[in-house]
Length: 445
Image (cartoon, rainbow, N blue to C red; front, side, top):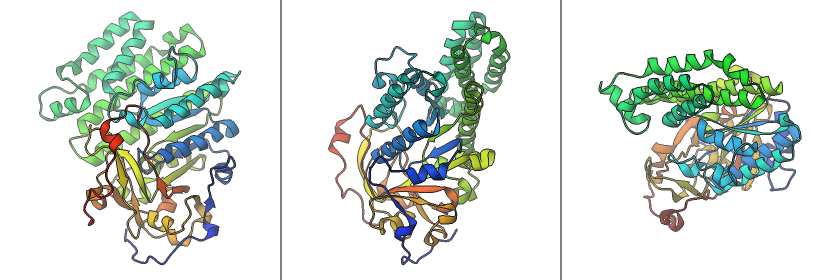
Protein backbone atom coordinates (compact mmCIF):
# COMPACT_ATOMS: atom_id res chain seq x y z
CA UNK A 1 0.00 0.00 0.00
CA UNK A 2 1.39 3.38 -0.98
CA UNK A 3 0.76 6.53 1.04
CA UNK A 4 -0.56 9.48 -0.99
CA UNK A 5 1.32 12.74 -0.47
CA UNK A 6 -1.42 15.18 -1.43
CA UNK A 7 -3.23 16.94 1.40
CA UNK A 8 -5.52 18.98 -0.82
CA UNK A 9 -8.47 16.60 -0.62
CA UNK A 10 -11.27 17.20 1.80
CA UNK A 11 -14.74 16.06 2.76
CA UNK A 12 -17.76 17.98 1.57
CA UNK A 13 -20.94 18.51 3.55
CA UNK A 14 -22.57 15.80 1.41
CA UNK A 15 -19.98 13.25 2.57
CA UNK A 16 -20.83 13.41 6.28
CA UNK A 17 -23.82 13.14 8.62
CA UNK A 18 -23.40 15.54 11.59
CA UNK A 19 -23.91 14.18 15.11
CA UNK A 20 -25.28 16.70 17.61
CA UNK A 21 -26.01 14.60 20.68
CA UNK A 22 -29.74 14.75 19.99
CA UNK A 23 -31.94 11.65 20.40
CA UNK A 24 -32.32 11.49 16.63
CA UNK A 25 -28.62 10.90 16.07
CA UNK A 26 -27.81 7.67 14.25
CA UNK A 27 -31.13 7.49 12.42
CA UNK A 28 -29.19 7.35 9.15
CA UNK A 29 -26.94 4.66 10.64
CA UNK A 30 -29.91 2.51 11.66
CA UNK A 31 -31.27 2.86 8.13
CA UNK A 32 -27.94 1.61 6.76
CA UNK A 33 -27.94 -1.32 9.20
CA UNK A 34 -31.44 -2.34 8.20
CA UNK A 35 -32.25 -5.87 9.33
CA UNK A 36 -28.68 -7.13 9.67
CA UNK A 37 -28.03 -9.56 12.50
CA UNK A 38 -24.50 -8.58 13.51
CA UNK A 39 -23.36 -5.00 14.13
CA UNK A 40 -19.68 -4.70 15.06
CA UNK A 41 -18.80 -1.41 16.78
CA UNK A 42 -15.13 -0.49 16.97
CA UNK A 43 -13.00 2.04 18.80
CA UNK A 44 -9.68 3.68 17.91
CA UNK A 45 -8.53 3.31 21.52
CA UNK A 46 -9.54 1.29 24.56
CA UNK A 47 -9.51 4.35 26.81
CA UNK A 48 -11.62 7.09 25.18
CA UNK A 49 -14.82 8.10 26.97
CA UNK A 50 -16.66 9.16 23.82
CA UNK A 51 -16.20 5.79 22.11
CA UNK A 52 -17.87 3.98 25.02
CA UNK A 53 -20.56 6.65 25.23
CA UNK A 54 -21.47 6.58 21.54
CA UNK A 55 -21.35 2.79 21.28
CA UNK A 56 -23.78 2.69 24.20
CA UNK A 57 -26.14 5.16 22.48
CA UNK A 58 -26.09 3.13 19.26
CA UNK A 59 -26.53 -0.16 21.12
CA UNK A 60 -29.48 1.14 23.12
CA UNK A 61 -31.26 2.08 19.90
CA UNK A 62 -30.44 -1.30 18.34
CA UNK A 63 -31.91 -3.08 21.38
CA UNK A 64 -35.00 -0.90 21.64
CA UNK A 65 -35.75 -0.43 17.92
CA UNK A 66 -34.09 -3.32 16.07
CA UNK A 67 -34.68 -6.25 18.47
CA UNK A 68 -31.02 -6.91 19.30
CA UNK A 69 -30.77 -9.17 22.35
CA UNK A 70 -27.04 -9.61 23.00
CA UNK A 71 -23.96 -7.45 23.49
CA UNK A 72 -20.66 -9.33 23.01
CA UNK A 73 -17.52 -7.46 24.05
CA UNK A 74 -13.74 -7.76 23.91
CA UNK A 75 -13.58 -9.18 27.43
CA UNK A 76 -13.03 -12.52 29.11
CA UNK A 77 -15.95 -14.93 28.99
CA UNK A 78 -16.32 -15.75 32.72
CA UNK A 79 -15.87 -12.12 33.86
CA UNK A 80 -18.51 -10.90 31.41
CA UNK A 81 -20.91 -13.71 32.29
CA UNK A 82 -21.16 -12.37 35.84
CA UNK A 83 -22.41 -9.13 34.26
CA UNK A 84 -24.81 -11.19 32.15
CA UNK A 85 -26.34 -12.74 35.25
CA UNK A 86 -26.72 -9.28 36.76
CA UNK A 87 -28.45 -7.68 33.76
CA UNK A 88 -30.80 -10.67 33.56
CA UNK A 89 -31.62 -10.33 37.27
CA UNK A 90 -30.31 -13.78 38.23
CA UNK A 91 -27.36 -12.76 40.45
CA UNK A 92 -26.95 -11.46 43.99
CA UNK A 93 -24.87 -8.44 42.91
CA UNK A 94 -26.39 -5.28 44.33
CA UNK A 95 -25.43 -3.01 41.40
CA UNK A 96 -23.42 -2.75 38.21
CA UNK A 97 -20.19 -1.92 40.02
CA UNK A 98 -20.42 -5.17 41.99
CA UNK A 99 -21.28 -7.12 38.82
CA UNK A 100 -18.05 -5.84 37.22
CA UNK A 101 -15.91 -6.99 40.14
CA UNK A 102 -14.40 -9.99 38.32
CA UNK A 103 -12.54 -7.72 35.90
CA UNK A 104 -9.34 -7.85 37.94
CA UNK A 105 -6.79 -8.76 35.25
CA UNK A 106 -4.96 -5.94 33.49
CA UNK A 107 -6.43 -3.70 32.13
CA UNK A 108 -9.25 -3.69 34.67
CA UNK A 109 -10.13 -0.08 33.80
CA UNK A 110 -11.14 -1.13 30.28
CA UNK A 111 -14.40 -2.51 31.72
CA UNK A 112 -14.38 -1.17 35.28
CA UNK A 113 -15.07 2.42 34.32
CA UNK A 114 -17.92 4.87 34.73
CA UNK A 115 -19.19 4.52 31.14
CA UNK A 116 -19.58 0.74 31.38
CA UNK A 117 -21.29 1.09 34.77
CA UNK A 118 -23.82 3.45 33.20
CA UNK A 119 -24.47 1.12 30.26
CA UNK A 120 -24.78 -2.03 32.42
CA UNK A 121 -27.17 -0.16 34.72
CA UNK A 122 -29.26 0.77 31.67
CA UNK A 123 -29.31 -2.86 30.50
CA UNK A 124 -30.60 -4.03 33.89
CA UNK A 125 -33.35 -1.39 33.92
CA UNK A 126 -34.34 -2.24 30.35
CA UNK A 127 -34.48 -5.97 31.12
CA UNK A 128 -36.49 -5.46 34.31
CA UNK A 129 -39.17 -3.78 32.18
CA UNK A 130 -39.44 -6.71 29.72
CA UNK A 131 -42.18 -9.24 30.59
CA UNK A 132 -40.99 -11.58 27.81
CA UNK A 133 -37.58 -13.13 28.55
CA UNK A 134 -36.88 -13.33 24.83
CA UNK A 135 -36.77 -9.53 24.73
CA UNK A 136 -34.14 -9.28 27.47
CA UNK A 137 -30.64 -8.21 26.43
CA UNK A 138 -27.64 -10.41 27.33
CA UNK A 139 -24.00 -9.45 27.95
CA UNK A 140 -21.14 -11.76 26.92
CA UNK A 141 -17.36 -11.73 26.55
CA UNK A 142 -15.51 -13.03 23.49
CA UNK A 143 -11.86 -13.07 24.60
CA UNK A 144 -9.61 -15.94 25.74
CA UNK A 145 -7.13 -14.61 28.30
CA UNK A 146 -8.96 -16.06 31.34
CA UNK A 147 -7.31 -19.49 31.36
CA UNK A 148 -7.49 -20.22 35.09
CA UNK A 149 -10.81 -18.46 35.69
CA UNK A 150 -12.38 -20.53 32.92
CA UNK A 151 -11.00 -23.77 34.36
CA UNK A 152 -12.47 -22.85 37.74
CA UNK A 153 -15.81 -22.04 36.09
CA UNK A 154 -15.96 -25.47 34.40
CA UNK A 155 -15.22 -27.27 37.67
CA UNK A 156 -17.69 -25.11 39.62
CA UNK A 157 -20.44 -25.88 37.12
CA UNK A 158 -19.75 -29.62 37.18
CA UNK A 159 -19.69 -29.57 40.99
CA UNK A 160 -23.31 -28.43 40.86
CA UNK A 161 -24.52 -31.08 38.39
CA UNK A 162 -22.12 -34.07 38.40
CA UNK A 163 -19.61 -34.57 41.22
CA UNK A 164 -17.66 -37.37 39.51
CA UNK A 165 -17.29 -35.30 36.35
CA UNK A 166 -15.97 -32.42 38.47
CA UNK A 167 -13.34 -34.69 40.05
CA UNK A 168 -12.22 -35.79 36.59
CA UNK A 169 -12.06 -32.18 35.35
CA UNK A 170 -9.89 -31.19 38.33
CA UNK A 171 -7.51 -34.05 37.55
CA UNK A 172 -7.20 -33.00 33.91
CA UNK A 173 -6.70 -29.31 34.64
CA UNK A 174 -4.08 -30.12 37.32
CA UNK A 175 -1.69 -30.41 34.39
CA UNK A 176 -1.37 -26.62 34.62
CA UNK A 177 -0.33 -26.80 38.29
CA UNK A 178 3.29 -27.21 37.20
CA UNK A 179 3.40 -23.44 36.68
CA UNK A 180 2.08 -20.51 38.66
CA UNK A 181 0.26 -17.49 37.31
CA UNK A 182 -1.69 -17.16 34.09
CA UNK A 183 -1.06 -18.53 30.61
CA UNK A 184 2.09 -16.59 29.77
CA UNK A 185 4.05 -18.63 32.33
CA UNK A 186 2.64 -21.85 30.87
CA UNK A 187 3.59 -20.84 27.32
CA UNK A 188 7.11 -19.95 28.43
CA UNK A 189 7.58 -23.26 30.24
CA UNK A 190 6.42 -25.25 27.20
CA UNK A 191 8.71 -23.26 24.91
CA UNK A 192 11.69 -24.08 27.14
CA UNK A 193 10.65 -27.79 27.35
CA UNK A 194 10.20 -27.46 31.10
CA UNK A 195 6.82 -29.20 30.98
CA UNK A 196 4.69 -31.34 28.66
CA UNK A 197 1.89 -29.39 26.93
CA UNK A 198 -1.60 -29.82 28.39
CA UNK A 199 -3.29 -30.05 25.00
CA UNK A 200 -4.57 -33.63 25.38
CA UNK A 201 -6.12 -32.88 28.77
CA UNK A 202 -8.03 -29.76 27.71
CA UNK A 203 -9.32 -31.43 24.52
CA UNK A 204 -10.49 -34.46 26.52
CA UNK A 205 -12.35 -32.20 28.97
CA UNK A 206 -14.07 -30.24 26.20
CA UNK A 207 -15.16 -33.45 24.42
CA UNK A 208 -16.39 -34.97 27.67
CA UNK A 209 -18.49 -31.94 28.58
CA UNK A 210 -20.11 -31.91 25.16
CA UNK A 211 -20.88 -35.61 25.38
CA UNK A 212 -22.55 -35.10 28.77
CA UNK A 213 -24.75 -32.29 27.44
CA UNK A 214 -27.88 -34.38 26.90
CA UNK A 215 -27.74 -35.85 30.39
CA UNK A 216 -26.97 -32.51 32.02
CA UNK A 217 -29.93 -30.88 30.30
CA UNK A 218 -32.27 -33.39 31.93
CA UNK A 219 -32.57 -30.70 34.61
CA UNK A 220 -34.73 -28.90 32.00
CA UNK A 221 -35.42 -25.21 31.61
CA UNK A 222 -33.89 -22.30 29.74
CA UNK A 223 -31.66 -21.29 32.66
CA UNK A 224 -30.09 -24.77 32.78
CA UNK A 225 -29.35 -24.67 29.06
CA UNK A 226 -27.78 -21.22 29.34
CA UNK A 227 -25.57 -22.34 32.24
CA UNK A 228 -24.45 -25.42 30.30
CA UNK A 229 -23.57 -23.20 27.36
CA UNK A 230 -21.57 -20.98 29.74
CA UNK A 231 -19.63 -24.00 31.00
CA UNK A 232 -19.02 -25.42 27.53
CA UNK A 233 -17.69 -22.10 26.26
CA UNK A 234 -15.33 -21.95 29.24
CA UNK A 235 -14.04 -25.42 28.35
CA UNK A 236 -13.62 -24.30 24.74
CA UNK A 237 -11.82 -21.18 25.96
CA UNK A 238 -9.36 -23.29 27.99
CA UNK A 239 -8.66 -25.37 24.89
CA UNK A 240 -8.06 -22.31 22.68
CA UNK A 241 -6.17 -20.38 25.37
CA UNK A 242 -3.81 -23.33 25.82
CA UNK A 243 -3.00 -23.13 22.09
CA UNK A 244 -2.73 -19.35 22.23
CA UNK A 245 -0.24 -19.28 25.09
CA UNK A 246 1.83 -22.06 23.46
CA UNK A 247 2.12 -20.04 20.24
CA UNK A 248 2.55 -16.54 21.68
CA UNK A 249 6.35 -16.96 21.73
CA UNK A 250 6.40 -18.21 18.13
CA UNK A 251 5.35 -14.95 16.49
CA UNK A 252 2.77 -12.16 16.66
CA UNK A 253 0.73 -13.20 13.61
CA UNK A 254 0.09 -16.79 14.72
CA UNK A 255 -1.03 -15.81 18.24
CA UNK A 256 -3.11 -12.87 16.94
CA UNK A 257 -4.89 -15.14 14.46
CA UNK A 258 -5.64 -17.77 17.12
CA UNK A 259 -7.13 -15.10 19.37
CA UNK A 260 -9.35 -13.57 16.67
CA UNK A 261 -10.42 -17.00 15.41
CA UNK A 262 -11.44 -17.82 18.98
CA UNK A 263 -13.45 -14.60 19.31
CA UNK A 264 -15.14 -15.14 15.94
CA UNK A 265 -15.86 -18.77 16.87
CA UNK A 266 -17.35 -17.67 20.19
CA UNK A 267 -19.56 -15.16 18.38
CA UNK A 268 -20.74 -17.89 16.01
CA UNK A 269 -21.44 -20.31 18.89
CA UNK A 270 -23.26 -17.55 20.75
CA UNK A 271 -25.46 -16.82 17.73
CA UNK A 272 -26.37 -20.50 17.38
CA UNK A 273 -27.18 -20.75 21.08
CA UNK A 274 -29.36 -17.65 21.03
CA UNK A 275 -31.03 -18.74 17.78
CA UNK A 276 -32.15 -21.86 19.60
CA UNK A 277 -33.63 -19.79 22.40
CA UNK A 278 -34.94 -16.81 20.44
CA UNK A 279 -35.32 -17.87 16.77
CA UNK A 280 -33.25 -15.20 14.95
CA UNK A 281 -30.84 -13.62 17.40
CA UNK A 282 -29.17 -10.26 16.73
CA UNK A 283 -25.82 -9.41 18.35
CA UNK A 284 -23.91 -6.15 18.88
CA UNK A 285 -20.13 -6.54 19.21
CA UNK A 286 -17.85 -4.06 21.00
CA UNK A 287 -14.18 -4.46 20.10
CA UNK A 288 -11.21 -2.40 18.97
CA UNK A 289 -11.09 -1.20 15.36
CA UNK A 290 -8.18 -3.60 14.82
CA UNK A 291 -10.54 -6.53 15.49
CA UNK A 292 -13.72 -5.10 13.94
CA UNK A 293 -12.39 -3.60 10.69
CA UNK A 294 -11.80 -6.08 7.87
CA UNK A 295 -8.09 -6.97 8.07
CA UNK A 296 -7.94 -7.56 4.33
CA UNK A 297 -8.09 -3.78 3.81
CA UNK A 298 -4.97 -3.10 5.92
CA UNK A 299 -1.22 -3.65 5.68
CA UNK A 300 -1.56 -5.97 8.68
CA UNK A 301 -3.82 -8.22 6.65
CA UNK A 302 -1.24 -8.18 3.87
CA UNK A 303 1.26 -9.61 6.36
CA UNK A 304 -1.04 -12.55 7.16
CA UNK A 305 -3.20 -11.27 9.99
CA UNK A 306 -6.93 -11.96 10.00
CA UNK A 307 -9.53 -10.65 12.41
CA UNK A 308 -13.11 -10.85 13.63
CA UNK A 309 -14.44 -8.35 11.08
CA UNK A 310 -12.97 -10.31 8.17
CA UNK A 311 -14.26 -13.62 9.53
CA UNK A 312 -17.71 -12.12 10.18
CA UNK A 313 -17.96 -10.83 6.62
CA UNK A 314 -16.84 -14.22 5.32
CA UNK A 315 -19.39 -16.11 7.43
CA UNK A 316 -22.37 -13.75 7.27
CA UNK A 317 -21.74 -11.49 4.25
CA UNK A 318 -24.59 -8.96 4.05
CA UNK A 319 -25.88 -9.86 7.53
CA UNK A 320 -23.09 -7.98 9.30
CA UNK A 321 -22.24 -4.26 9.54
CA UNK A 322 -18.80 -2.95 10.55
CA UNK A 323 -18.58 0.52 12.15
CA UNK A 324 -15.24 2.14 13.02
CA UNK A 325 -14.48 5.08 15.31
CA UNK A 326 -11.68 7.65 14.94
CA UNK A 327 -10.35 10.73 16.71
CA UNK A 328 -7.81 13.44 15.97
CA UNK A 329 -6.63 14.54 19.42
CA UNK A 330 -7.56 14.75 23.10
CA UNK A 331 -6.79 12.58 26.10
CA UNK A 332 -6.89 8.84 26.66
CA UNK A 333 -6.59 6.36 29.51
CA UNK A 334 -3.75 3.94 28.77
CA UNK A 335 -0.65 2.39 30.31
CA UNK A 336 2.96 2.93 29.29
CA UNK A 337 3.77 -0.79 29.61
CA UNK A 338 1.81 -4.04 29.85
CA UNK A 339 0.55 -4.43 33.41
CA UNK A 340 1.37 -0.82 34.27
CA UNK A 341 -0.90 1.67 36.05
CA UNK A 342 -3.60 3.57 34.21
CA UNK A 343 -2.44 7.00 33.06
CA UNK A 344 -4.33 9.93 31.58
CA UNK A 345 -2.30 10.75 28.49
CA UNK A 346 -2.53 13.39 25.77
CA UNK A 347 -3.37 12.05 22.32
CA UNK A 348 -1.16 13.72 19.74
CA UNK A 349 -2.84 15.42 16.76
CA UNK A 350 -3.16 13.08 13.78
CA UNK A 351 -0.32 12.72 11.30
CA UNK A 352 -0.56 14.44 7.93
CA UNK A 353 -1.74 12.05 5.26
CA UNK A 354 -3.94 10.09 7.67
CA UNK A 355 -7.68 9.51 7.64
CA UNK A 356 -7.89 11.27 11.00
CA UNK A 357 -6.18 14.35 9.57
CA UNK A 358 -8.58 14.32 6.62
CA UNK A 359 -11.54 14.19 9.02
CA UNK A 360 -10.06 16.93 11.22
CA UNK A 361 -9.87 19.33 8.28
CA UNK A 362 -13.64 19.08 7.84
CA UNK A 363 -13.87 21.30 10.96
CA UNK A 364 -16.89 19.35 12.21
CA UNK A 365 -16.66 18.04 15.76
CA UNK A 366 -18.64 14.80 15.39
CA UNK A 367 -20.01 13.08 12.32
CA UNK A 368 -20.78 9.82 10.58
CA UNK A 369 -19.14 8.93 7.25
CA UNK A 370 -21.14 6.28 5.33
CA UNK A 371 -19.21 4.21 2.81
CA UNK A 372 -20.41 1.79 0.14
CA UNK A 373 -21.65 3.72 -2.91
CA UNK A 374 -21.45 6.95 -0.85
CA UNK A 375 -17.73 6.68 0.00
CA UNK A 376 -15.96 10.03 -0.58
CA UNK A 377 -13.43 9.96 -3.43
CA UNK A 378 -10.72 11.36 -1.13
CA UNK A 379 -10.84 8.19 0.97
CA UNK A 380 -10.26 5.56 -1.71
CA UNK A 381 -6.44 5.60 -1.65
CA UNK A 382 -4.50 3.98 1.19
CA UNK A 383 -3.89 6.28 4.14
CA UNK A 384 -2.48 6.04 7.62
CA UNK A 385 -4.87 5.05 10.42
CA UNK A 386 -4.18 5.16 14.18
CA UNK A 387 -4.71 2.39 16.71
CA UNK A 388 -4.23 2.94 20.45
CA UNK A 389 -4.71 -0.15 22.60
CA UNK A 390 -4.27 -0.46 26.35
CA UNK A 391 -0.72 0.86 25.87
CA UNK A 392 0.00 4.26 24.35
CA UNK A 393 3.53 5.52 23.66
CA UNK A 394 3.28 8.95 22.03
CA UNK A 395 7.07 9.28 21.91
CA UNK A 396 7.20 6.48 19.30
CA UNK A 397 3.73 7.00 17.90
CA UNK A 398 4.48 6.63 14.17
CA UNK A 399 6.10 3.23 14.71
CA UNK A 400 3.84 2.04 17.53
CA UNK A 401 0.36 3.14 16.57
CA UNK A 402 -0.03 3.83 12.85
CA UNK A 403 -0.66 1.50 9.91
CA UNK A 404 -1.86 1.79 6.31
CA UNK A 405 -5.46 0.95 5.43
CA UNK A 406 -8.20 1.52 2.92
CA UNK A 407 -10.96 2.57 5.27
CA UNK A 408 -13.96 2.30 2.92
CA UNK A 409 -13.09 -1.38 2.44
CA UNK A 410 -12.26 -1.87 6.10
CA UNK A 411 -15.61 -0.59 7.46
CA UNK A 412 -19.14 0.05 6.24
CA UNK A 413 -19.11 3.44 7.98
CA UNK A 414 -17.02 5.44 10.45
CA UNK A 415 -17.89 7.80 13.31
CA UNK A 416 -15.31 10.56 13.82
CA UNK A 417 -15.09 12.46 17.12
CA UNK A 418 -12.45 15.11 16.66
CA UNK A 419 -11.51 15.66 20.31
CA UNK A 420 -11.93 12.82 22.81
CA UNK A 421 -11.44 12.59 26.58
CA UNK A 422 -10.10 9.86 28.84
CA UNK A 423 -12.40 7.17 30.17
CA UNK A 424 -12.67 7.39 33.97
CA UNK A 425 -11.56 4.22 35.83
CA UNK A 426 -13.51 3.15 38.91
CA UNK A 427 -10.19 2.68 40.72
CA UNK A 428 -8.37 5.94 40.07
CA UNK A 429 -4.77 6.45 41.11
CA UNK A 430 -2.60 9.50 41.69
CA UNK A 431 -0.90 9.04 38.33
CA UNK A 432 -4.24 9.12 36.48
CA UNK A 433 -5.59 12.01 38.56
CA UNK A 434 -2.50 14.11 37.89
CA UNK A 435 -2.55 13.35 34.17
CA UNK A 436 0.28 13.68 31.71
CA UNK A 437 1.58 17.20 30.97
CA UNK A 438 0.99 18.13 27.33
CA UNK A 439 4.70 18.34 26.37
CA UNK A 440 6.25 15.17 27.77
CA UNK A 441 7.40 13.73 24.44
CA UNK A 442 9.77 14.89 21.68
CA UNK A 443 8.34 16.79 18.77
CA UNK A 444 9.81 14.47 16.16
CA UNK A 445 8.37 11.10 15.10
